[in-house]
Image (cartoon, rainbow, N blue to C red; front, side, top):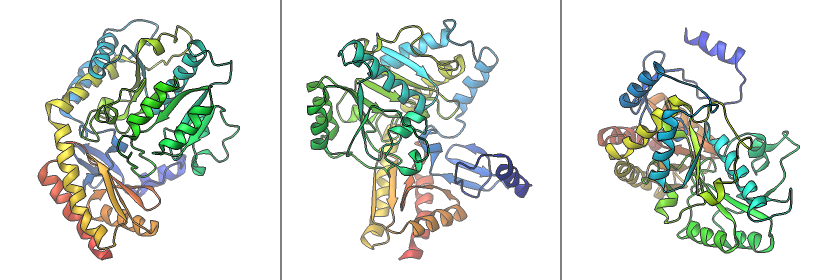
Length: 402
């Protein structure tokens, strides 16, 4: 049976992912189970989409009830759940308006459209001259615009011609940002991942984001924080931007916004930016659908109700402390992270690949993100016992490299 499933995948599926050789059939809490019912700790969390754990019973209950009531009516009509969702999101994050979409990529693309639109209407940038600053090694998807704003060859090569209007600066380099902003009056937005995820969990230095926001204000540029991966509690705060005492002009959320139940994302912003988007300028058939908007508020509520922010801080610190001896021994180059968004880094990518395979064999699922760097991001509900057992397994694998 298992062999047959792999054959179907390789024969009929486009092979655009290098998946680990495991066939998952179900999940519950911090665990995934293969077709032989073997249990694995999930340290990928669907790339930070299941912060609340797999198939959280309270979210499943809401989903079942809503599926029997209404799943889709499109934005051709107003819908009850969407109206409540709008109010909830703006109240929770402190904004005036909410633009609902489905995926993080869609939401980031929408934020770029909003920034361009604001640039032409409010900042009076000449037609077709608006530009967006992005950081090198950014990742927000694989649409044509996302490819065009990427500096990773595997993302952009052979997909041209590219969308114009992107300027590149080094991540976490405030002087590089100033050089770009100070000489170009056509810059309308600076889109940044507060912590770069796919680049290997790269953390900002102290005050970088705060100084970047002040610089945006000085040059009348919108700051766009892509918190699709970092948001909804992953780092031990609801958003990194809030933790860093900044309020971006546009805040992009997705992934864990539904606890992994159904795709939903959004862009939050204030009236001065959002008012320029009018009927016909943007849309999505499934964006803001009744099913997703029924689930999302509870997915956020659970973060608070089950103390996931505090748990992410505690368990993340426990993990990083447990990994430090292996940095001192030279097994690892680095361990870094915030909350439960962490990475360990090997000097040799081949050793990193071997580590992932050995963890798989011993019941921990994780994944290389870049080079020799491995993401270590379990659901935020992980208990003391589950974290300690996971660490024991991970340490037992690391010991073979000592």
